[in-house]
Length: 163
Image (cartoon, rainbow, N blue to C red; front, side):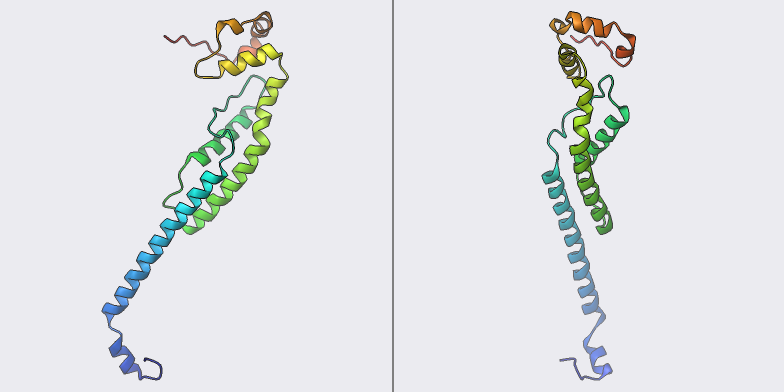
């Protein structure tokens, strides 16, 4: 109806209230769309979660502390919910998640390689020692005692008494 009308006629038809209403509606749609995008990226985050991401990261003796720190950062990335991010930040977060999943798959097995080089009894002891419950006394075998007697192996080990 506006095509071909004079500028005065068009101006009289478009009132500031209708323009403001249209802008308000567009703003609401934009915010709603951004919330939906954040939810979608958060859903994708949950779908991309690598297996074992919730397991504690333990830098066993002989393993790289830098590797453990990198894996902890990936854990933190996947633990943080996606919300209130701008479109540019959403793209970066999605890329970080994709990179994190790939790094986890490549690097997580390396953390346990230091255990594979140990005597099987020492490996079992260290796996138990790294849990919340700790290692039971029955795992202190002669091989474990010999390993524990080397100060280089025990520099980062602590004994904790719990009731």
